[in-house]
Image (cartoon, rainbow, N blue to C red):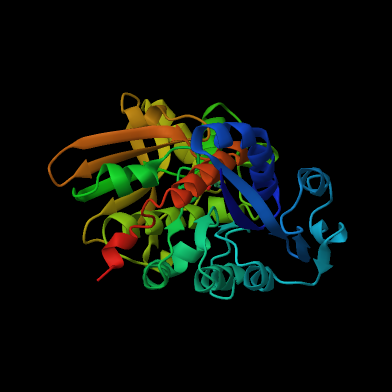
Length: 350
Ligand code: HSE
């Protein structure tokens, strides 16, 4: 059995679900892959909980029941300790970073990733900010340190689009990609189509837990722009979220747009459009009801990829939700253990 020490940074909805899924699937992972993931520390916004040397199951179960920001109140906790100190002390083989995505160069997530790589850890992300802000920097840094960054949970959380592009389309070039990649706004647009007003629809998306902690990020197209920049960097050339042009936001005015479209038997979708050699765009489009993308409902996501060899490929599946995100993090951890290339790092190697 291969024992793998991991560090978990971020202990909100996704971090907790990740621990639950890890506990629930421990036996399956051991049986099928001969691997056991042992959590050496959990860092939240106020401190760190350490294991001796890893956190036992009963303590993990207790941690799942403490309020947010209180993981360090448990036995083995150090209040005020930073995630970076924990990484330096423990030197885990992999670090799972699931703090909220904040698109600001001062976000602690950037240092968390840097320090993890410097200490020899592979990094598994659900937080989109590090790669949306500094894709090229982190990929080069990882490659030079012999580590890998996995980020399948950042885009289309429950659907392996990143693996599909990274491994499935290896050696082929993507000419264009159009995607419904924000579950919250797709859900909101669907509810407005069903007759709810904008405010009611947003409220419901928040209650369902699809929206970002600061849901303006979803409505203002920032989440979609982050995903567009990550996909553009992965499949075309490295850019930052700041290079993405946001043409529309989702606000009260969409009620009228949806109503007008419906009278013409058209559907309104909020998409990211990536064309090779052009800046990616985030915008509202109207599609005919027959268009397969028009039928993407709720928090489903969908991408239409056109390769330069003229193939059109469609991938559809869950795009948001804590359970699918947690399961995707587990999948990336398994790729890390199995020494599969991550993050397109191959491209950065000399
Ligand atoms: N808020 C995001 C969405 C979560 O609605 O798609 C997944 O990235």
